[in-house]
Amino acid sequence: METIESSLSFISGQILWGPPMLFALAFTGLYLTIGLKAIPLRKVGYAFKQLWAGRKEQGDGQISPFNALMTSLSATIGTGNIAGVATAIFSGGPGALFWMWCIALVGMATKYAEAVCAVHFREKDGEGNYVGGPMYYIKNGMGERWKWLGIAFAVFGMLAGFGIGNTVQSNSVADALESTFGIAPIVTGITLAVLVAMVLLGGIQRLAKVAGKLVPIMAILYIVAGVVTLAINAEQIPAAFSLIFTHAFNPTSAAGGFAGATVWAAIRFGVARGVFSNEAGLGSAPIAHAAAQTDNPVRQGTVAMLGTFIDTLIICTITGLVIIVTGAWTSGESGASLSTLAFNTALPGGNYVVSLGLAVFAFTTILGWSYYSERCTAFLFGPKAVMPFRVLWVLAVPLGTTVSMGFVWSLADALNAMMAIPNLIALIVLSPVVFSLSKAYFSKQ
Image (spheres, rainbow, N blue to C red):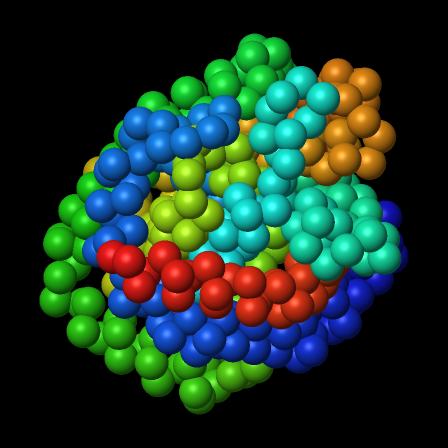
């Protein structure tokens, strides 16, 4: 097992998440940002207005624009915001947070383009439901001869869900609840599996309703806890930003239990964990946005880009700053344990905030990703494969609590990269469509 884990870690870290992938993600986001004349950055206020208006349906689809974003956020706000940020800082130092911000800023354009393509090229399935995502905008936008690329995405998306959206989540929750409350991992796994099964039986409509209520509440509570912790350590915030900007471009020397990190480690872990958290470029979120009740793909695109803004620029930033201002980043701890230590250092009962927050975040991520992987499965094998998929999905939840954490993260990173490749190709090829639709829409505003 150790040999497999080390080999997978090498493939994930040195090949799939090496310089070419980081360049591809950054280039695509930057290219789209420039081509869109920075619409995702200039229209953040407009996007929040559309999000508020999107609480009600605005066209054909299965779920409201608001709930489409909540479903997307239910999948993105997860262990990446707590354990992922902590892992990035542990491995790359405070500078990793700077590179998370950079990939998020250009990632807003990527997420916007994904949703525009998803709605524009979506289609109806045999039951009259709107379905979409990279596999559909590759097939319908790039033509039948490129359908193999859409199939490749669907295969990777189906498999990736069991890593990033399932076992990683249950593994992190089990670890946090065991250390905080002494709950046996298998008990956590079985409980999560039962709760997930209850929601999955209701399909996308029930999932969206649960996400629409649970995601805003959990995000606000976590943000409040983080802001309180930062307020308690307000005098350390300027020094924290100094560390972030300094070590984004200079090696981090060893301090306390922190072993030190190179600039490349800061870039690699900052970008990789940033993408793991906000999923911009992976092609997952547009699967949810394709089901939105909207009459214009650009309107949904503006709503979709807020997923990256909220996930990384707000929630991940709060986690990262708490870890740095409390000095916990030099403790030698990693993952959820590092975030727990950071909150507990300044906030009485902070360990409960992290553990319970992680449990709820992970639960909603398992739900959101179940829909993504289910749609990929249905694209490959048809609607008859949906129920067998749901059974396997539920069974994988408790299984994830018993697997090595290092192995799970490496597998998740590898599958993420394999998802991103066909999606990034499609976004570049279809970018003229995105630019044209955006120009036409905003010229009327």
